[in-house]
Amino acid sequence: MSTQRPPARAYVETYGCQMNISDGELMEGILERGGYTIVDSPDAADVVLVNTCAIREHAETRVLGRVSQLNGLKRDRPDMVIGVTGCMAQRMGETLLDQAPYVDLVMGPDGYRTLPDVLANLDDKRAGRTTTTIEDVVERPRKRGPQLAVLQLDVDENYQGLEQRRADGPSAWVPIQRGCNHRCTYCIVPYVRGPEKNRATDEIVAEVRGLAEQGVTEITLLGQTVNSWSYDDVTFPRLLQRVGRVDGIRRVRYTSPHPNDVTDELVEVMATEPTVCAHLHLPAQAGNNRTLKRMLRRYTVESLLEKIDLLRAAIPDIALSTDIIVAFPGETHEEFEDTLDLMRVARFHEAYTYKYSLRDGTPATRLPEEDFVDPDEAQARLEELIRVSRGIQAEINESEVGRVEDVLIEDEGRDPGQIRGRTERNKVVVFDGDPSRIGAYTRVRLERTTGSTFAGSEVGRPVTVSA
Image (cartoon, rainbow, N blue to C red; front, side, top):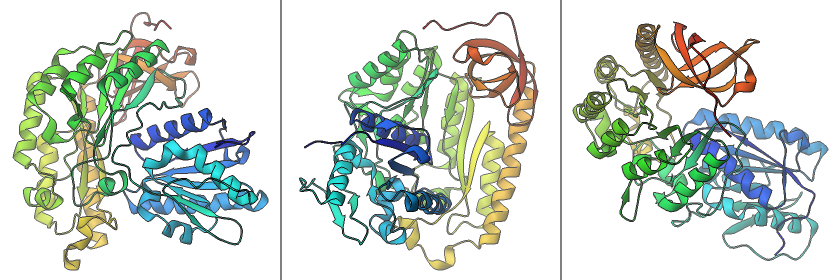
């Protein structure tokens, strides 16, 4: 069947994590190959897809407000298609079509491969044309035209053979894994992305090689628990090693790992491969063993600290970041204090901090009602965690003033005449320079810090990257 009636223009607006950003690039690539022109504004689009996150309630509320705004455009252009894709679409399913009746399409993460066909199907149905029914598409009639839902999870869908439409720049996300086999009690991901599905080794390496040939020098491997990836007899550390040895690649990162899969083999590769960055995001989530057990994290505070000691013994300069959730149901104030103690002992360079957010469909929703922490107390705990975390980050960064670091220039700075870059250890630094040098590497002395970022000045001549 024909997948597109040109001309048609599409706009993808993404909310959420790095995986969502990567999915947005994937959808743009699929649509472009399906005959769509990708535009940079919903005002210029015939199809607007809002690519969503379901990790926290606030993210979903924000998306519902956004699609309501987009309905204002649709009133003036009734032929415009509004779609909601991603984790929120999968979680809410057809109920989203009831809450936002102006939405034409909901599609979960495993449906993207069929996106041009589904949109063509929707176009046919609107026009009253006979169309071939697409498997796993649910149609709902309404007065102003049909609504379609594509929500089937596919245990084999890892998007092998599909390429993203990436923006120009020196860095690229490379998804190597989708879904998750863990069942952390607070987390919706396994229920909206399905079980772990890993891409083939050779395809990943070939994609990285192609990116290097296009001038990309920094790669981030993506997965829900990325270091659990394996394919045939290849382990994640060996994949990391192969990617890091691709000609033209100067930096390799990966996110987000699970602490249980930080192995001796992985630490050895990180310590010995010069392209693998001395930075790791290691989600701790809590600093109390009873809380970790209730979260079903499958490690203890003691074993987590052993992993941190292992990393720092092999890579003394490593910068560690983390995720922390406060006010998980049943967390006492003393257990929250244990989390603060973990922060003081582990001394993470950066922490992403959250209040527990109830997600329908996750096991934590079945905990006794009396276990749920009072919202005001939860907010107070979050504010205290942020204070402690930022204090540690400021102390660490202040101690690093005077260091000279290799910096990849990523973007313009906020002020005229400035550019912004990132060190191997994931520290952001702003300094004077020409934006035409984005993509180059240079050496920068870190001269002062605001607590979270640095200001600096170049040392010696800039090192440019050959195309």
